[in-house]
Image (tube, rainbow, N blue to C red; front, top):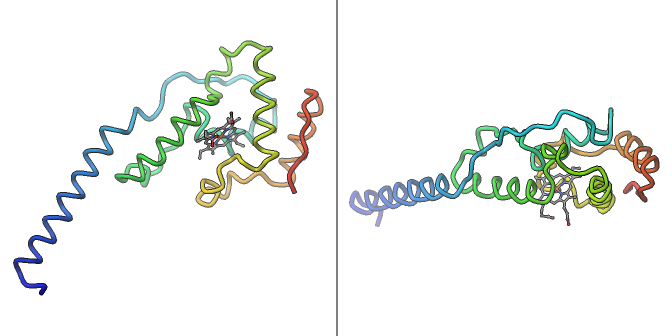
Length: 155
Ligand code: HEC
C-alpha cells in the first residue's frame, strides 16, 4: 500500500497542509507588542512584582514570546489569549486609567485571583514561575485590606 507513489502523495499533503496553516497563522496573528509602557505603581512594591510574574504576559504590552509561540496554530491560540487578556485589562495602559476607575479594575484583579481563575491554569502548567504562592497571597491580602477590597486568599 505504501508504494513510492502513495508516499509521494502523502509527503505532498503534509507539505501543503503545513504551508497552509503557516500562511493562515501568519495572517491571523497580530503584531506582538505595542510600544506603550507603564512603569509606575499599580499596587506597589512586592505586589507589583507578583502581578508582573503572574499576569503581564497576557495583560500588558510586555509579553514574552518564546520560540514555540511562533509555531503555526500554537501562535493563533496564544496570541488570542494575549489579545483577549489585553482587551479586558492592559497594565501598560494603567497610566491612562483615571484614579477612580483603577479601584474597579483592582477589585476584578483580586476577584480573579480569589476564584483561582487567573492566571489561567493552562498557562501556569508551562510557566511554574507564574504561580501565586502562599507568600504572594499574604502580600496581596495586605494590599487588598489597605485598599478596602474584600479578598479571601484561596487555599
Ligand atoms: C495566559 C494568559 C493570561 C494570564 C497569564 C492571565 N490572564 Fe487574565 N485573562 C486572560 C484572558 C484570555 C482573559 C479573558 C477571558 C477570560 O476571562 O477568561 C482574561 C481576563 C482577565 C480579567 C477580566 C475578567 C472579567 O471577567 O472581566 C481579569 C481581571 C484578569 N484576567 C486578571 C488577571 C490577573 C490578575 C492575572 C495574574 C494574576 C491574570 N489575569 C493572568 C488571560 C490571562
